[in-house]
Length: 289
Ligand code: CO
Image (cartoon, rainbow, N blue to C red; front, side):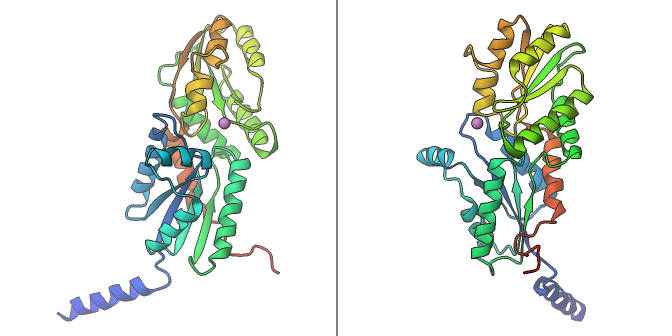
């Protein structure tokens, strides 16, 4: 009886101690309404559930347009503020806000600013709020993401080329991250190219390089977290402007692999690593006032 009582007291002390933080995860994505795009989000969520069993995991989507579109279909996706409220209601006192963006571009900057504004408004809600950086934050991340993307092309044969479609941006940090990732890819695989829907090397210049390398078959795959609208239409769609159509018109045999990076275990692992870094607590001022 006494040992059991002691154990109970010990357990209560541990539960009440300030060291036993209850951590929750807010996974923040742009969002997608394309059919089939959810596979990547589901895979990432599975990876988080497996790594942090019992921890609350909540989603927030930043695209107003996509949230409104899904809301009209009866599927309500939370905003960042609503997601934080839900974690607070679940008794979480330490939050990891994990960006599920591919690059630290405009969308990530908006997420960081929104999160900071919110945390500043509700100072007492959480003991710590960490911000997990996007997929391509370092050269090591680019190496890992590219390994994951290349490994997912299981049916690619020697001599087959691959062109990855990133979203990209024609300005700012995302442009730099895209150029960096493209360079890492070129160093790894002489028959692989990476460029963006917005920004990056023009497809015509890649087509010229493919011809020069005497390539016959080209694989097309998205280098985006989800295989959404851009992958399904701009990359692989039947429209004459799609990359698949342009490559076919240039004489190449084309195969498509419409799997989002989020569906590859390697990419999910990068996000998990960034969630574990916990070096950017938004509740603390980095500089002395
Ligand atoms: Co877009």
